[in-house]
Amino acid sequence: MKKKLLSVLLVAALAVASVVGCGSTAAESSEAGASGEAAFKIGAIGPTTGGAALYGQAVMNGAQLAVDEINAAGGINGYQIEYKFEDDQHDAEKSVNAYNSLKDWGMQILMGTTTTTPCIAVTDKTAQDGMFQITPSASSTDVIINDNVFQVCFTDPNQGTASAQYIAENKLGTKIGIIYDSSDVYSSGIEATFVKEAEAQNLEVVAIEAFTADSKTDFSTQLQKCQSEGADLLFLPFYYQEASIVLNQANQMGYAPTFFGVDGMDGILSVENFDTTLAEGVMLLTPFAADAKDDATQAFVEKYEAQFGETPSQFAADAYDAIYIIKAVIEAQNLTPDMSVQDLGTAMAEGMTTISVDGLTGEAMTWSADGAVSKAPKAMVIKDGAYAAMD
Image (cartoon, rainbow, N blue to C red):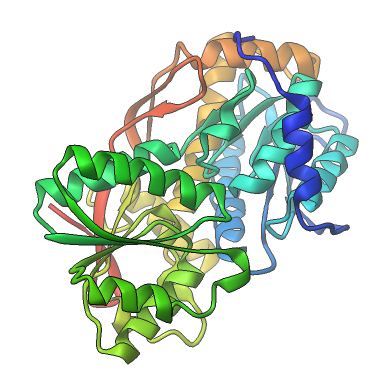
């Protein structure tokens, strides 16, 4: 395993501080090994109910598609995949409960969790068990403090830095306002690196306004401050639910700056009762564009839409890539499902720094020893009610 050390007390404290809950629901999508034949058992965790359900459902479905393809093509090293998904409702304690349930099922590899705070809690458990873990979309650097955990998504620092660079290089705004969730490690992590890079890029940040989980339904104060300071671009590093409220309230105020978000903005077009015309022109950085013309993306989108009845988001694409990354490292290390969880975990963690994977969310993706991925972001704009790649 790599050289990093786990601070058990810190991660445990994060888990205890989360909202207490119990129970979860499971979606089992592959029973390849039910007959008693050896199979790789991959578990996954994310919110399929609750406020962040769009993320978890996309991850569950994207991984499902990859599992089905791999099994149909003969599996991994000749072995099929068993795949089971647990709902955590974007709650840290429920995520730990889901992890324990998947362990009872016999999970050998974890693809998850989907969102950051639950993922931080679960990484403590996978580190203790020596289990390989790859998260499609939990982007905080706190997620990869342990030797066994890797990311498919960009880290928060990378998102903040890349966003500031893109805004500056393309001269998208002269005065920048920032609204962020100071109670969320995902949002505050991106905000911090954005501010630092904005200074390096000579962007004029005229307002930095925070909100918390307890005050995420009324953004009038933050919007009024940004408007009064003349901000012509608002950087919104948080999730699509709150972003839809910001756009609606800005419209009610007659305030129409350019809006720029990050990967958490993906999903805004699916918010119930949201007037999607308000999102026209919203920009965001993401590793995946469903309208890309390459053969791999077009094939994935076609299959996803046929199976699930909707256009896939970047979260679906990240999860799809995560399963193929697992396949790539197992094949590179010539591993078999009769190995112990710890032996699989050690070999896969070592192998991750040696592979290169061409995926939907990046070409020639590689991983450093600290678990972070190297790949290039893509800029998207909402145009005519759909996501479109920007030049």
